[in-house]
Image 1 (cartoon, rainbow, N blue to C red):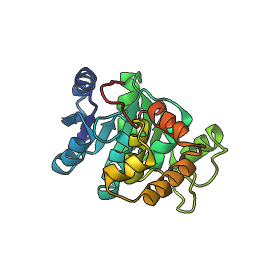
Image 2 (cartoon, rainbow, N blue to C red; image 1 turned 90 degrees about the vertical axis):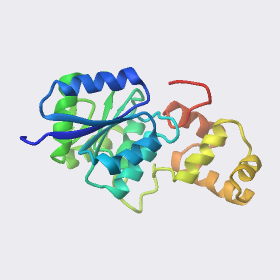
Image 3 (cartoon, one colour; image 1 turned 90 degrees about the horizontal axis):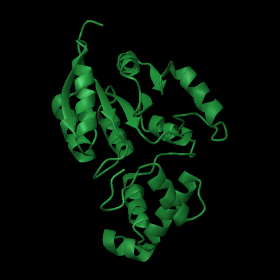
Image 4 (cartoon, rainbow, N blue to C red; image 1 turned 135 degrees about the horizontal axis):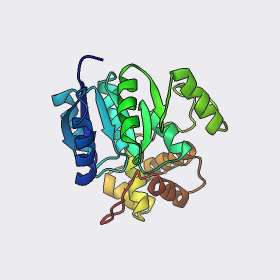
Length: 231
């Protein structure tokens, strides 16, 4: 691969960002063209620097990495996103690929594997951990790991684990802070019934029984931060 790969790093930990940059700077193929510490800044930067690949954390200030990825992929589908996260479970992997990620790696991924994965996703491959796959192989992996969530990965008719909408994510964030439906409605300037409708959709999409389980799910997967806390 003769041309350099332009990489944007999105993570709110300065030391981790610097570590990734130092690693990639040792590879002549890689060109780190920017860094962002939160989701909103990342979205703005993508249009300015036009990276080939984004290394994206999930647990970010402002809006989480899944939301950022979906926004970016909607506008710039050719940009490849690699999720690098401490939240490692099969359901989270499924969410990441549903919003358009090309790879999902733990934060302790080896330097050699990370550079290989970056080069692989540029050519249209996918990766989970250190395993690089074609799209068909990825589907087979997901079926094996979480076969009970059957249905095509990108199928429009499949409502299982469809990513939450920005409004649903916003409501879920308020739920994690202990607000009632009525309080959420007042805060967002929408009707109580609208909040109830959104909550019904959230519970269905996450396959949980109540708002407490939904809040626990969001916190466990790093989608939402409690104020004053760090992951």
